[in-house]
Image (cartoon, rainbow over all chains, first blue to last red; front, side, top):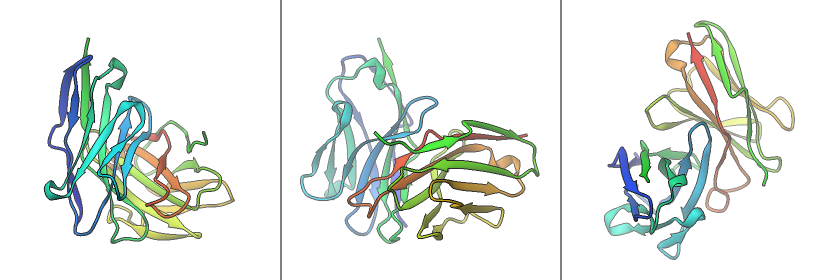
Length: 115
Length: 115
C-alpha cells in the first residue's frame, strides 16, 4: 500500500535561514507527488506538484522540491524563510492504483519561524 | 481565482445527531472528495465522487456516512448519527480532470465538534 512519511513533526528555523522539509514515499509505480501548506484556520493550499519530467519543480512562494527516485524522496526546500511561512506542511502522493485520483498524505510538519 | 467553499466553518453537535456538511466545488470541476483530519493526525481520504456516484471510499466511510450532489453546485457529506470520534476537520476538494493534469483544490474545512 502507498504511504508517505514526513520524519520531522516540528521544525524551527530562523527567519532568513534556509529550509528543507523531508518527505519519503512508498509506492510501486511512478508516483505523482504534491506539497500542500495549511495556515492556521485555513484549508490546504497547493505549493507544487510533480508528475513527470524535470525532477526539480518550482512552486509558489519561492518553494521548490526535488524528486529523487533512488531515495523515494520528495523534499521541499526554500532558500530563505519568511515569518509568514510558519504553517503546517503536508506531503502527499497520488494513489495511481486507484483511478479516482485520491491522495495519501503524510502526517505533516509544523514549521515555526523565529525572528 | 475560483475557490472551493465550505459551510459552516464550525459545527457543534450532540452525539447521536445528524449533521450535514456543505461544499460548493469549483464550478467546472467534475471530481469531488471529502477528507478529514482528526486533531494532530494525518489528513485522511474518506470518499470520492464522480458522475453522480461514489467512485471510491475508505474503511472510515461506513454506513453512517453518505454523500450527495443534490443540484449542479452543492456537494454534501451527511453523518447520520454522530459519535465523539467523528470530531475532526472535514475538507471538501474538487478537481477538473485527471489528477496528472488537474490537482486537487481544497476548501477551508468545516470543524465538526461532537459533544
